[in-house]
Amino acid sequence: RRGAAHLAGAFPVAGVPGEGLAVLAPPAFETEAVAPDRAPWGNPGLDRMLGGGILADTLVLLQGPPGSGKTLLALEFLGGGAGSGSRGVLVSFSDSRARIVADAAGWAIDVERMEADRRLAIVCARPDVASFADHLFLIDTVLDRFDPRRLVVEGLAAHARLVGPRVFARGVAHLVGSLRRRGMAALLTWPTALDGVLAPLDRELATFADAIVVLDVGGDRDDPVRTIEIAKMRGSWHEPAPRAYTIVGDGFHIGRSWREADALAS
Image 1: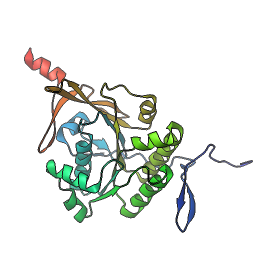
Image 2: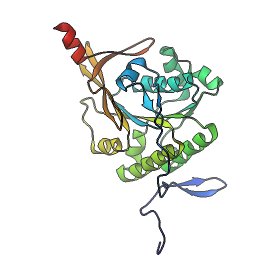
Image 3: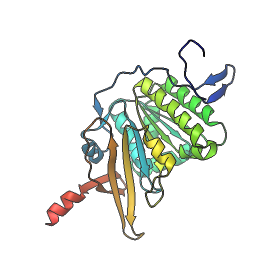
Image 4: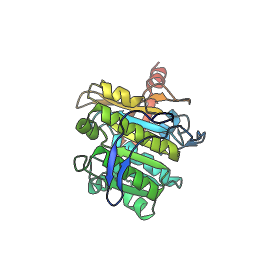
């Protein structure tokens, strides 16, 4: 665009029935204020590791192999917001609403009550029934209508496989910009390989995050060793040492750090 400021590059476009095309471009300039206040995650052990909770406008990337407890921590994140009066939205591209409700009930989390109290909205969609841009527009629409303070997106990795790394990165940039403008906290779950090695796309996604929580499962099948670690927390103190954790009927329990365990043993 000659003689005027503009955004360079290509951006996702969504077809909106009755309205035409919506270009999902980030703002030309960042104008949001930084929110200094902390908010509890909803898990006491993790709040201690985070130095009291997360900053109110933090984007968290929750990484871990299948079966490590990502969904449970995500539900506790939404429950923590609901408990302090903040609305939340759960967008799942991997599970149905019935599956989410059943899994949550198994951990004594009543998401149906949270929905009835207008503290939670659940949106489930298959990633292959619409374009990535259409799904991003759907998220924007839900955020506009429900006005939440917390967002969880599960199953985002499926879009990366469908559209490729370049389009996916631009779509995530739009999502991050949308969250920044709203000043809300968000949690993206992301699967890692069983060996914990990050692929190039994982490392690129990590650059968007303000905080990265990593779950790891080691040991063997009969005696697994589960650990949680705060790998990154931008601009704020956090506990760097990993801690062991267990998953039981009433939730996600974080124990002592390895340093504390070694000190007690000696």
